[in-house]
Image (tube, rainbow, N blue to C red; front, side, top):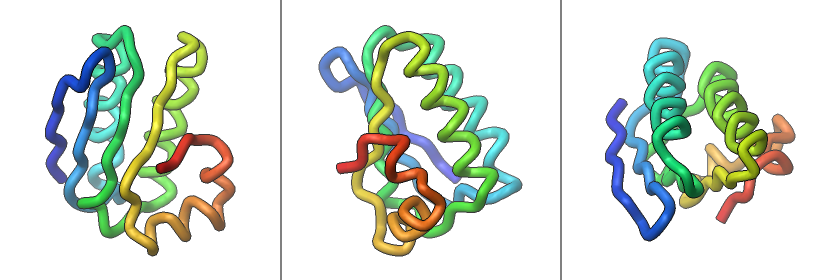
Length: 100
């Protein structure tokens, strides 16, 4: 898994490439929480390069999303591949995040 970080106005854009599976979930969560701690604005996570997401990957996003909501900030997801969008829809996670 690889994460590119780019400042986008007052927000941070993260482009994730690889699998959000059990072996990658903890490092992904740690990287994401580091960005949450360092960023005053919102976070946009581009998942166009993600072809698989497990429950561990969903949990990592949930933890970051809760931290962002606590700080009255937004974590948005963008460019989900159809199979990834289906996982979010089936699990109910689509209602927890702004997805574009």
